[in-house]
Amino acid sequence: MKKGFTLVELLVVVAILGVLAAVGIVSYNGYMSKSKVTVIKNQVNQVAKFIQLKMTECSMNPGSMNLHTPEGWNQYLYNPGHCVNSSLEQIKHGIYNHIDNTWNLSNVYEFKVKPLYTSDNTNPSQGYIHFLHYDQNGRKYFLLYANLGDHLPTEERYYKREIDFWE
Image (cartoon, rainbow, N blue to C red):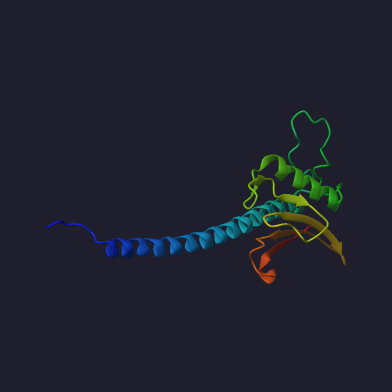
């Protein structure tokens, strides 16, 4: 008498493995989507904390913001920021240049470095963060506006942080 598996037993095993693989792929894709959203939110929060730190330093010591100036550059890249003598736009560009030249942020959807952009709109592509500034009704503030992913419903797609400028 030969011992072995019947064709039906083998087909049942293959069917079970197929179901498990399908469930695993769906779970993996959901996990990856949630991970990408978390990474983008963390990037926005890191940038916001850095801006808050610089604004707090300005309120305590209203001098130079000590932002990065590229090596060999004999002038400031875009006036990297003086707490009092720089405009809000100049400070925004100084902070942007500092982050752009010293941090290794990347867009988790396109695997490109540097997803942060100075912008005048709140419509970034997925994985990108727009960095804006406002001076409205006596309130000066920065806005970070990120697209968490086009797979999300519109009401959940965008993440924003506002950071007040202290004078």
